Image (tube, rainbow, N blue to C red):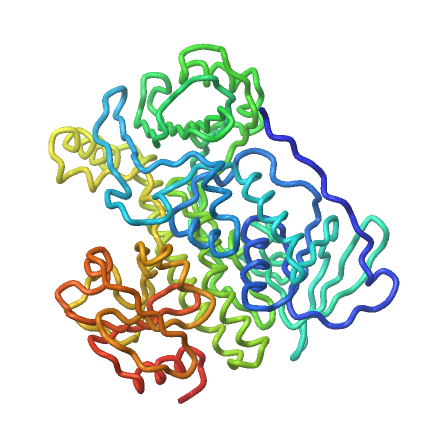
Length: 517
């Protein structure tokens, strides 16, 4: 059954009648990033108000490929399993040159993870699940049809001017988080702009309702016969909806190419018949750009308002949720007077580093998919021809390096005898433990993970010492006989030691909270 967009009610805000007391956090934008931000702050006992100028979820699929890391974050804020049940799980990708398969890849060849490599689920479902969770959470207040028209900062607060159908009012807060998308009005009102590349290339996106049973795989074509000289991508979604992306070229007229009479013949050539229903169409231009800084005094930018990438590689929405991950625990620490404000500099440093990694990957994919005539096209075509015969060349084929969590630069203690996949700066790899999953036992506060040894209590962290299984040994110990890991509240590994060292652990905890010890 096609998805129905139900409007959410406008509730008269109290600020229209009397001045409101100062709030802790205002979040502008009720997309996946803004909603996840509110729920993550609520996990840290911090209340927030979410303001959105609309009262319905997104039209069209938009972000659809939710990575393993995003699913783990969504799980921590209460909607992961619901997304998993509704979504289309996949881990295999197939790459074609013209009509011949060049190679396939498996994104999660190992078992022992709660979440799969990817789930395809239309953004409107994710938004619905998050809105329902937010409306049930006493620490989150949703205000639909509340448009932020201006923002002014002072030394100790931020003031937002807000327009509603019943009048205007003002709110004051300690912090405002701008999650209002690529066309952010907050960014514009503050005179901020992106730096980066805008590529002279356009793609058509179409959601098509198609009653067929294609495998749950990512399929990417270079120059298929059904779309000569261009690229194409196909993903399966719930409700018999298929997402098709078709390269158009820079000379394409977006308005003309979006008309059904022009879209439908293109889709017919892809699927081979006309037995389908067009559900949603859009045309987009590749951009790989970001703000120089994400923290501007008491205004913080996250998601597309801070950075935008081309959609190939699923780095947009997934990167936005990782912004939430890195910001929530730090901002909560500031608001609860546990940490000084300069802890937010660590968020800025980590997420601008991650944005640059995403921009680099996205730019390289764009140039490989849309090479200029001459040496670029010759090199691309030779790589594709070689990849069909030689496995070593397949790593050079770039149809969008799929999103994986960034490994942050880290000063945390390390030991070379332990596995690289669990080094400081990386997300703690999941594994089965007694009565559940490791990541469900981590997150929300600092945790000391003790493996193969007894760890005394330390100030500022919980100690978790599961039985060491073969999988935990493989992912955390390697050739070491014991290990102690310090895991941050966002499930990122801060440091690791080969033996219990309470003094070093407590010193690292103080450094993470910016306590100057």
